[in-house]
Length: 454
Image (cartoon, rainbow, N blue to C red; front, side, top):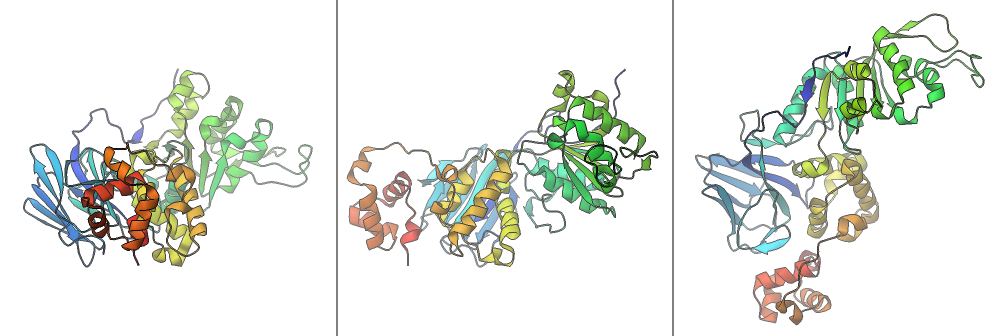
């Protein structure tokens, strides 16, 4: 007879998929990466005006939205989005530095889901996503110092995290599911903070627990209870008493160890190896795994009754490629952790920012953190440039050559940019070409004109 219990889901998925709606995200400011990102609902609008302002701001009036970018490289009337039937069309309004979509200069283009828009050193993303549960059409991502990891602009994920906050204050067990590197331990720590339990959070890597010593590791042991037991040990579960036990990668726990764990969770007490009396426990259980546990149960690799015990509220953490709108939020949080008081001084070149926002991040937030940590060290207090990023992040897709490219090579382009101090219009005039052709060469040869400006 199988043991089941109701599951409170924090999943991004639903049995009935809501109809996607259009959104515009202000994701990242290369010269001010700590500036909060924002999300803007386009439903009900006819047009969006975007241009330079004294501060990052927005104003919604009737069927129009105006977004101001605190960006010296953006023009005061830089670009406009216009709804044409069921599509959104982006038009550059003759801006000084042009508008790029997915790294290529554009004058007028129909936007597709996921397009990355670049204006000056500001990066925006157009997305078609499920509607938000809240009513506010414009939302800023306020950082949460008390619960890092619980901030997002993705509507469905924001809804899941709001539910998690409610559950965090209860004794309900929580199961966090997601790919490696998505930040499962960060979520567990946020849950522990919100629970206000007086004890500590004790993280346990289940894949590293030796099968022959699992009881001693979890329950503790008495001195002399086995060879090598030279002193009394509390054990991981007893260390988490009145706090939170975080069982990371519980899907890697072997069946015999699962049986030991299940018994302790059912009885809410443990007996140290070599001890005679059980010790009562009061702990909050948070588990995490990158495996699909239902499939593990079907394959006989995971106990169904243990799954029923740990699966209270289930949170599905999306991969970073599924929440690229949050890259600005994540970069700011990581810089705050790595650079501390100096985080507000960090700058990125446009080329470096473009690479960050275009990379697929297959290893998720962990890869992003490692990349930023290395870049900060290499920049040594200066702006983070393209060459400071790992090779895997710097890789760009080749742009197919055209006949116009025959008239230019990278060395010649660099000479012209140096001579004209990065002024694209002056370079175009010297070549007898349109600005858009020079911008195409910049993309083709992977050159950032702003690096030549004094």
